Every structure is written in structure tokens, then in C-alpha cells.
Length: 306
Image (cartoon, rainbow, N blue to C red):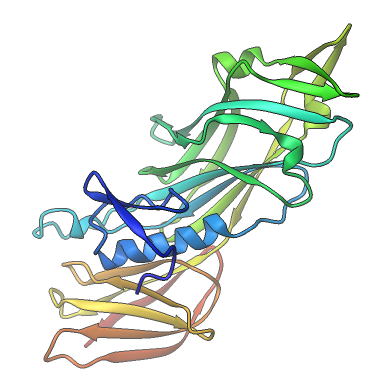
């Protein structure tokens, strides 16, 4: 059933992928829905991206986690959460190297709350991530469906190399309040997104003369959805059932219905699927064929009578 990374390990009552380190689960590893989320996250975190220019890619894996498995069984509500990843890439420029000291990434939601992401701190040579290569620098899970601002926080160890000579690269604003990028994005539950932050280093590095350089970032943001989702409900409610979507290439995505009978298959790539609803006895398996998933939208199957 688990088709992502080959192994997960317990971490404080949750599960985290040993290999990619970013499949952080809300519930126990055995939860089918969480397994599906981790599977999808692993596929996209390890999948190489083909981008142009310096781009920081925020893969907004807008998946809807169902908390009914983690909460009291009398709670019929299903809350959505939105996993976020940040990637960084570059385009060739007139420098030997451009080193940036990444120490933090923060997101401000529509509710005004700031979320400090789980960052991979380090000094990155942006020119190592050119011609479609990129690197993952931060991840988190948001509870707000809106993003109003992104802050990239840099340390003091930034530099630019020109003609084999290394020059300090001053970034006062990035070290104090972070590089602030104002955006206005509304995320849809169950859909994976990528927000591309197009960072033009050629325009961002300022030569002040006498070997003095500073960084005044020029960044453009672009939103992109990369998956869809399938949702619906079963009647009668209160019946335990497993929902499985199978693609034409036999990729499977699985979740369970909530106490109220609702379900959502999250992070589903565009394509045509066969849906199998497998309830507990005495109800029979129900199959729905030809279900189309489009990127950036939820396919609603409506109410399904067993």
C-alpha cells in the first residue's frame, strides 16, 4: 500500500521518511491516509524539476489531511492542511559563484500568523543549481489556505566570486528582517501547488566599486498547480470503507472515509482513474470507472450509495 520511500521510522509518535526526511505525519504510520500523503510527497520531493533562471520553488503540496484518525472518534469534522516545500535554483551568470547563507524561511498566512518552516540551513552556491537543477531548502505544513508573504532569512556568510576572487556580499535586509516577498495566493485543499520565486541574481548583485558588493534581490513569483484531487461521500455514513484510485499505469492512491462518510484522495496527478470503494461487510465493493482528474481542481464524485 505504501508506494513512496521504502522505509519510515517513528519520531515522537509520528512517522518520518528516513530518506527524504520531509514526509512528516500527523498520526501513526499505520494510518492509510497518511501513508498516501507520504507516498505523494516522496514522489514530488525526489522528482527533478526543470526550471529556468534562479528560482526558489515553493511546492505547496496542498493536501487535505483528515484528522478524524488522530482525534476523538465522535468528531466528524475534516480539517485541511497544506504541506509546503521551498526549492532554490539558479541560471548561469557572469560570476564564478554566488554563495547565500540560508538560515530561515517564514510564511505569513491570511490570518496574519507567521510559520517558521523546517529549514535545511547551509551555505548554497546558487550556480550549482542551474539549467534545471534545484535544491530543497525548507518544508512545513500550513493550517491556513492563504499565503500573503514569504520571507527568506539569510545569515552573514554570503559572498560572490568573480575572476577567482571572493568578495563579501552584504545583505543587511535579509539578515535583519528577511527578504520579504508579498504574494496573494489562495490554496485549494487536496491540490499540490508550486509557487515559483524567480530570483534574478544578475540584477540582484550590486557592484558598489572598490570590491564592494551587496545583494538587493529582484524576485518574481509565479503560482502553479501540479496535481488535482478526488472527493466524495458514501451513504450510509458511519460505515468503514477504503477508497482506492487506480490510474491507467496502475499507480494507486488510497484513503479511508471519515466518520461522517466523506473522503478525499489528495495530490492526484492529472489523468483518468478507476475508483474502488471497499466497505466492511455486508456491503459489496463498488467500482466507478472513467473518473477524470484535472490539474488544479477537485473532482467531486458526490454522494455514493453503497
